[in-house]
Length: 307
Image 1 (cartoon, one colour):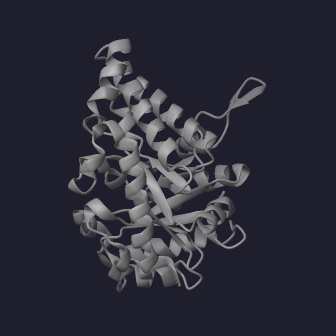
Image 2 (tube, one colour):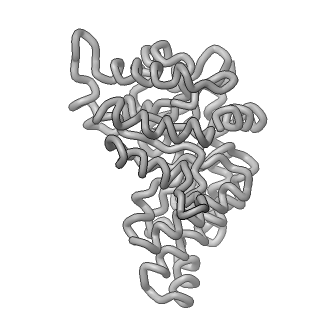
């Protein structure tokens, strides 16, 4: 899948992933009203409203971007119905030709880790048959428990030709409490970056590894170091837009070939209609507002990724 992701980025000239992280408050009233009329103000009603919202946005942006990234917590809050919405969202995105990055941030050891991997990027065996539960191509992982928590995912991904993005330096304000701690003369995030490079060294696509990294746009000064530590790792960059990152700040996330990173924007795109800049579209045209936000982001990122 890393080859497909790189190919789509080149083809569309857009190193962009749209975060499908739908709080119910983002969903326009007319969409919620329709779902609630059919299913009531229930968990199923919430799930169906989110699916309708996501579907409209995917229809509006699928020809502009290579990938989407649904954040599973936004779905899990609605229980089983939310997970059904997550599955429907992944399936619909795949049907439109999009690469799906499941933002699940799992991290455990042994058989538990392998079970997570099977559930999200592998196949579950049931008697003589096998089933894929979700349509994710990549997933995000938390490496706090070390290699034991990552390698079972890598094993399953090798079987399925899918990939992972490992948290290295995250965009949240308190990330430095642990990630910036100096260990043997260097910050912890550098040590994690070295392990990402090691894990990916024998799991390569044509140009880049199937083992990527998450490095926040809010820390561009650290990207230069990490880009050198992980030359063949694709970097997933959160923190653009709503969290303060801008295209001009992201040059060091990319390699000299103009590739090597994909930048995420979530509410800046999916809730664009709520911003003053896109207010002219109104809630009734929320998907068109999202499309315009993608076009604007694509133009802004030319400052960073076009070499």
